Amino acid sequence: MAFVQLLSAWLIPITIAFILLYGTVKKVPTYEAFVEGGKEGIQIAFSIIPYLVGMLVSISIFRASGALDYMMNGIKPVADAIGLPAEVVPLAVVRTVSGTAALGMVTDLIATYGPDSFIGRLASTIQGSTETTLYVLTVYFGAVGIKKMGDALKVGILADILSFIVSFFIVLLIFGK
Amino acid sequence: MVNLIWVAMAVIGIVFAMMNGTMNEVNEAIFKSAKEAVTISIGMISILVFWLGLMRIAEEAGLLARIAAFFKPLVRRLFPEVPPNHPALGYIVSNMVANMFGLGSAATPMGIKAMEELKKLSRDQEEASRSMITFLAINTSSITLIPTTVISIRMTYGSASPGEIIGTTLVASTISTIGAVCIDRYYYWKRTRKGGKR
Image 1 (spheres, helix red, strand yellow):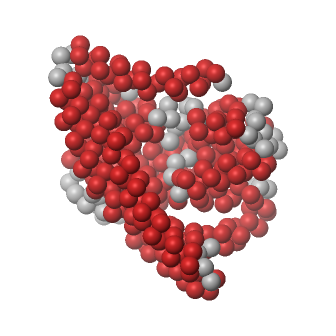
Image 2 (cartoon, chains in turn green, cyan):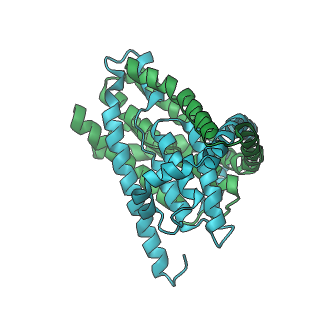
């Protein structure tokens, strides 16, 4: 574990040093290139704002009204029927929509049931193996001004469902109930 | 479909609040989340400026092209519409590598650059191209080598083995990424069958 922590602390600084040295060796005007490239970042950040405001407001209305909780209560009996712990089902739904909410939920599940319980391990695996699809789509498409997402949303959501199912079976297979 | 989901979430939420008596919570949530969205976007400036600056150096030094060349066989199959030596491939690969190592802050700027390059290749400037959809399919299922955040939460709550979920996470995310690419291919196949529209 110590190695993993060390690795994550060193990775970014090492990458930075490597890029800077590589640029210097290849005779790139490093500082000027950095400034030029960095300028783009400001523009991009501002263009994301309307996309993100729109999406987050809609999601938060859905959540704050209690509709999300209601929907999850509806899913619970289905989950029980296939042997899925009902406590984890809300996470699967929220993971796709909101990253911070999902992280809060994972922390809560781990705190309540213990990190080494079936639920704790499953929640950990789900959190690690999926992304906040709606957020990723909003930011990436928003940054470049794509308004029609095409099949991207469908593909992303189906991939999330698949990821959730796979997580369940892998954890069941490796650690047992 | 985005329009539909977007409107549905808001309208269902508001109607639900009428019946449920949670209108005050909804009111508060609207303005709080709007503010949060702006805070997130503005907060991204530092990361975007820093990494895009650094990536410009990497690009000019030819480092991106080298990384892309290394993963060429794989990336070319995933993105057949992108010309072999196009800068988009370099950004796509860097984004994937950063994601694998859990460097979300570095992955996002590179991903955005990749999208920008893909947009240059696209005929339609408003609609997502085939390559963009593939790229986002891979991104949303994300292959993670070391899920650092989860490990640290597990540590906090006294896990006997915080890192034991690295294996399951890796397997789950690999299978789901492969699955995502298959789903993406299926929808592409469906699109092309329907009257040749991309």
